[in-house]
Image (cartoon, rainbow, N blue to C red; front, side, top):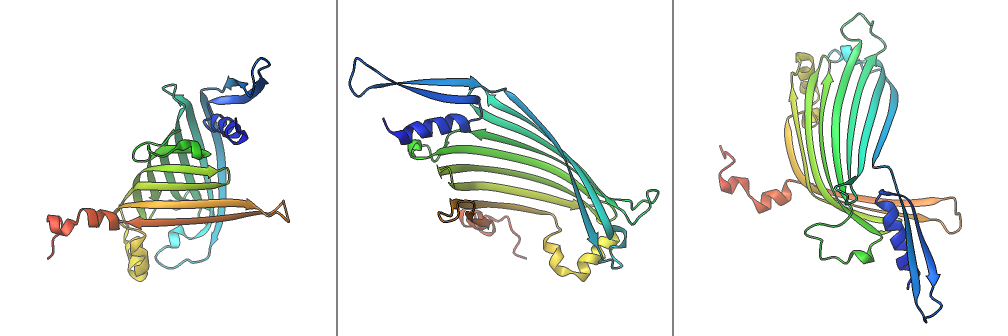
Length: 274
């Protein structure tokens, strides 16, 4: 019996999200030496969870050049977020979350009857699957040494309509692993991180803005990005000031390098050297 194993067991049951209440009762056996009965009491949580919230934002834009007059001014935004979660898919504590987001941005400097009153609108959907164990290639790790771990898959699609400028469709997919060495120390690895954006219906005013600001061309274009990310976070409490929390986070990201060295497209004939 080790207190550390006892605490990890309770924490792992709680982190799955399947159980509403977790309790382990320790009972010493009277007729034996150095033996205990561990009575685990679990109260199931509701299988489905639903969340809804509304967000608002306000920004004042004083940069009204001739290329973006229709989209400059005081902007007021509203967005609604809906989320539905299945906490126990296939009765294996696998969590699946469906998240829907819809938003609209209004130009307060324009009249409601004008075509420029609605500045932009957005609609997006995200699906996240979380499996409470490590899959290949980390199945060889001793998970008992970790506070908790999970494998996750995330897929998202979105459509943004910047009225008078452009329309943008986005698609993303990520697959990764999360290692929690302790309640305050975690490592996240995404070996697969794919993002695709399709920019279309560009207006002449938007094209003139890109011509005047060449550095914006890399932010607004049609692109496919395949890469990997690694993130580490550590949170500690100041021993001299218990109400102060110190946080350290670092993220590393690469895009295309590993894929290029593994499958050099120019050598395979996919790139036109001319």
